[in-house]
Amino acid sequence: MNEPKATRPRKRWKRVLKWTLGTIFVALILWGFIAYWTSTNDCDRKVANPANPVKAVVYCDYGITNLKLEEIEKPNPTDDQVLVRVHAASLNPLDGHFVRGMLLARLMGGGLRKPKDTRLGVDYAGTVEAVGKNVTNFKPGDEIFGGRTGSLAQYVCARADRAIALKPANMTFEQAGSVAVAGITALQGLRDKGHVQAGQKVLINGASGGVGTFAVQIAKSLGAEVTGVCSTRNLDLVRSIGADHVIDYTKEDFTKSGQRYDVIFDNVQNHTFSERRRVLTPNGICVLAGLGGAGWHEDTWTHLVRSFTTPLMSKFTSQKFSFYISQLNHNDLAWLGDRMQSGKVTPVIDRNYKSLNDVRDALAYLEQGHAHGKVVISVE
Image 1 (cartoon, rainbow, N blue to C red):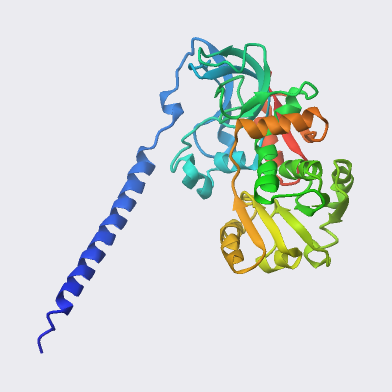
Image 2 (image 1 turned 30 degrees about the vertical axis):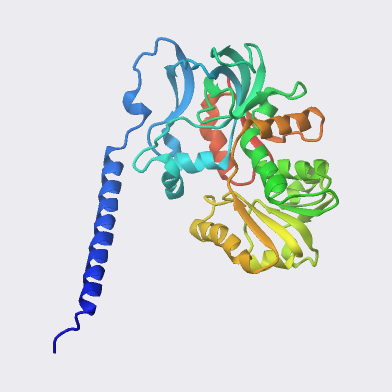
């Protein structure tokens, strides 16, 4: 029996669609293969004997054992940049993810086969040494703090209109050099995503870590009643930075406490969607801070799937779940600088390593997952 003519075009379209999708799939595989094997980084173009050598932490291949302190050419600022002599820098969990070459970090632009950017660190504080001809808001001698890739070095260049601000006079370089990533993550989560208002009840899950210690103080500065969740050894610390109430997670699960909160700032993300809903007010907001603890756990992919899918599930409830990754910028650094100057926010330093040579030890300590506050490295 002959096939009806009307079905023939439909089958042709199906064949064309299958062929097109198949071609795209093969092209993507081929592109990935070529990108993997032809990827290069700064190490392939390294200057053997820099004319103006300065020290910087680099890693040409993935793995913490590949972290090295090497001499590189001293950077020169462009017309819109400032040259900063770095005095202190700090580490964040994402630094470890990139150094170890976690798949997620590679997909985020870290480089498939080898690191795309071989410089480590983001947070820093230092003194402006020179400015480009278009820079009017900074001058040589200014003490500044900020965030940019490659901060674990003696010198960095940074755009004067980006994530850089004047250092508060009452802060040390070590304190100011710990602020950018953790401070802005906490600020944007609480103010912009959580919309924290005076008088609200706010719970900080992971209150003793780098982001958590900033979050407790920022929530208090916004007028909230703050509950901090941490381990037994950090209860006094969390109280001392302003928490009205503390919960020891080794003895009590906050999702079973019977209390309800207007805003939950979840820096750990170790509870399910339904568990967190149980302790939110009917119109409460749960803010999922970046990737939380992803990367230190064996169940990393479960953790990541939960981070991305939970906000979608909240579309069907009156409660809101918000996932975000912070964006560094000048205005938020200046906001934090004002709060530090007034004493409302003070960075908490867990350990201060005294040399760039100590970067492996510093990162290994951070990766244990028990740092209270920030891990800082002084730059000689």
